[in-house]
Amino acid sequence: MDGEIDLELYTVAIIRLNNAFKKLENDEPVDEIKTLLKESSDDLNELYKSIVEDLNCEEVNINEYYLFFSNGKIAFPQYLEILKNIDRKELQSEIDSLINVFTNLNGIAKPFSTNEMI
View: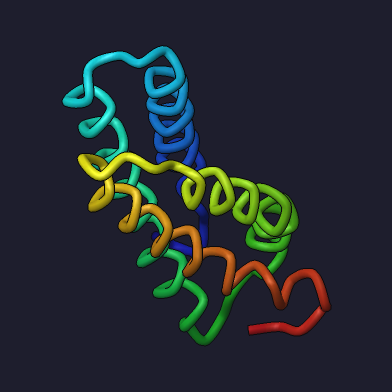
C-alpha cells in the first residue's frame, strides 16, 4: 500500500456499516443487512492486512498512521460495543467477523494512545 492508509476503502466500509445499522434499526430485510455487514467486514479486513503489512516495513511514515489511529482509538471501541449488543442469530457470522476486525484494528490503535510505537 506504499505507506498510506486507504482512507477511501475505510470510508466506504464505515458507510456500509452505518447503513446496515440503520436498516437493522428500521427492521429492513435481513439479506440486505447481511450483505452490507459482509462487504464492510471484507473491506475492513483488507485494510487491516494492508496496515499490518505497511507497519512491518523497515521505513514507516508513522504520521500517516498516528492521525488514523488517534481517531480509531475512539471509534473502534464504539463500533465494538454496538456490534456486541446486536442480538440477531441470522447475522451472527457477519457480526463476529466485524468484531474480530475491529478488535484487531483496536489492538493496533492502543499503542498510539500511549505513545508506544509499534
